[in-house]
Length: 390
Image (cartoon, rainbow, N blue to C red; front, side, top):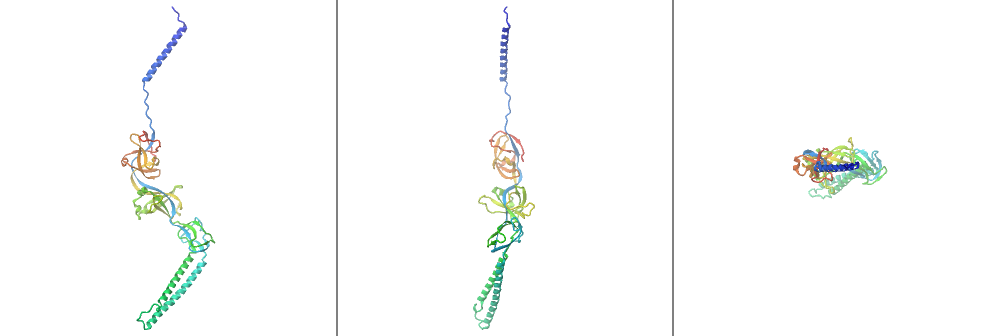
């Protein structure tokens, strides 16, 4: 009987192990091929949306303009001479009451002119009285001459001489009035409650007729012209063209740099379209603006909020929802992105109020994308997440 040594047994055992490993591997591979891979749910981009439904809201029209004094005057001298007096307050930034003395021009020349005119008037008055007496005497002498039945000539009755005397008297009277006016103009007074914006003269300055002495702003009434588009005019109250009710329209002026606010009222509407902006302006006014607790200064650039009509069928959206001035993205019932055409009616605070072009859409709730991205495509599948941003 052959003897099997240890080396042979080891060889057989090794071959057997290799065979078993190959067999087991094959079986495992066969099982893996028969088992289907687990299904993975598709992942879609999550978009933030606002669910909107039609509401009613009072329109608010926003416009911008510069505050100006209604009356801006370049104060000029009406007479010539040397400045002999300036008020201590006659400095830029100071204010004057109407009629308050600003400056004075040397009056001696005009006082003399007035005295001469008054002397001439006295002479003319005397000459007129004398000629009136002569005219009456001529009339009486003609009646006593026995020629009363005949028509006397005007020259005989001294009518031309009387007319000349009257004309000279009237001229002398006007000369006195002119001299009084010139003398009064040597005292320069504030024509209205005024703010001194600039000053061009000093004591000792020689001025001529028409010389500008200062620039004055009327501080009793400031106004701001607010250019509006044709669409904005449509949002204003219907009383905008009623002169009796126009002042009831409320306007709030705001300085956006300081957040200070001032109430104003509508004063008038301009009846022309600006050739550059192609817009028509609404003019609002503020009375006694310098005397307010928070003074309103001329030159301020302000935002105006004007209360308008009550508008129906509006959507309130965050301003970030706009793709452009007439488009937003919506997520439809199938979870697909789609364009929606809208008209922006007005904005208020951080919201915009729009109307969809398709009026049928306002009868239901719609999901509008809050923050549209440039990568969005029409019919792109997304997952809508309602997030109210207002």
